[in-house]
Image (cartoon, rainbow, N blue to C red; front, side):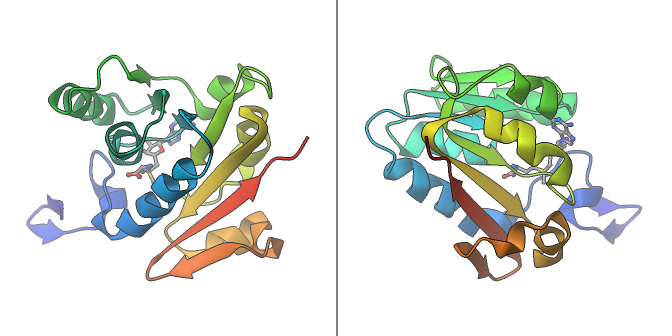
Length: 175
Ligand SMILES: C[S@@+](CC[C@H](N)C(=O)[O-])C[C@H]1O[C@@H](n2cnc3c(N)ncnc32)[C@H](O)[C@@H]1O
């Protein structure tokens, strides 16, 4: 836990984001990638220090993992972890605004799995994130609290998992 002026604060107040309590949502991402056929590719749109994308690169048979964030301090840590885990050739580290990055892909050239994990509501990012999902692929939306899903309007989807302090929603893109 990060300490600021002697006080322990939550991960959202730290210079770079890492939430150990979100490990189950990372398990869910890994499980989803595991059922997407052989050698899927993955985009971790807002990777923080890269924990989610890194786990997929190391623990699944993903062919390619793109991790992205706009926080340079977080990305530096992410890149060090990429090196430490020996997955430099498999993981591409990017630093582009989420919407601009996702809009550069489409259903043919995009990803089997896209994971979106913003601070607060995912509403400003969901539509463009879907552009980057390949036909038949999956968009995962992560949130530390259920309320942001309600605000986003995502709660009407039925396969929303709600466990502990984190939530993860999985949407499949058809034809
Ligand atoms: C909740 S954290 C991500 C945590 C990470 N997915 C994990 O599993 O540990 C949200 C991240 O989004 C990044 N971020 C915020 N706005 C962004 C944007 N427009 N484009 C890309 N990244 C952004 C922040 O720097 C922060 O690291």
